[in-house]
Length: 213
Ligand SMILES: C[S@@+](CC[C@H](N)C(=O)[O-])C[C@H]1O[C@@H](n2cnc3c(N)ncnc32)[C@H](O)[C@@H]1O
Image (cartoon, rainbow, N blue to C red; front, top):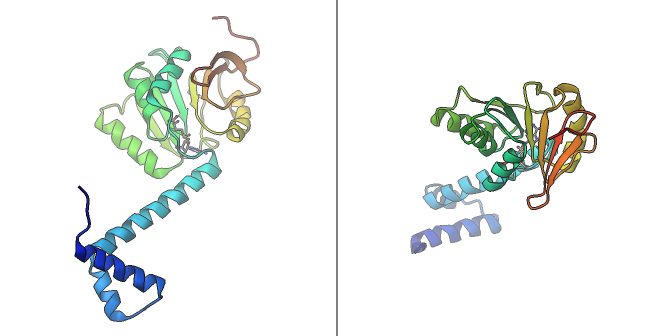
């Protein structure tokens, strides 16, 4: 069972007194500074603040981090008929789950572009740890500014407004017949090939004529 010792509660009480009564006594500061509970408390508050700022920032750049459930990732990659000769590009790769599924389960090459440096770093560690560095590449950057022409399959889970802004870039840079699979949010100018109502995912391809499957 998780419980606080009396001494920890005492220091926490001192901390509340100091901050809520705006006391600035040196002795109080000293007692508090030397206490591990306060250090951990401040560490957690700072980490939380930092995560909220990152979330707001990535949201402004394209979408906040909200991972696609793993089963849905597999289903979407199956829907896009990913083969070993494909290069799957995840626009905003988050924790790298789409890249790992594409590489390990479908034996495809995978590229992730992620703006959040912490997540990009995490993906790189994961890829190195799993020995996938030859097959999977992660770029820490803004997908609006990166070259995406190498992709044969593009995976998106962003926002509707971001998909709207992205459409022109997809049409300009991707070769015809590149498949684009998107979670929840749609594209208006790409050719719709399939809808999976159960997972609310959509498969498109870049081109003008409906693809014959
Ligand atoms: C909804 S999450 C999807 C993560 C992953 N693709 C998945 O399906 O599990 C969107 C991701 O896109 C990233 N992102 C948002 N805007 C971006 C941008 N302009 N360039 C690169 N990554 C971006 C966010 O940091 C976040 O990790």
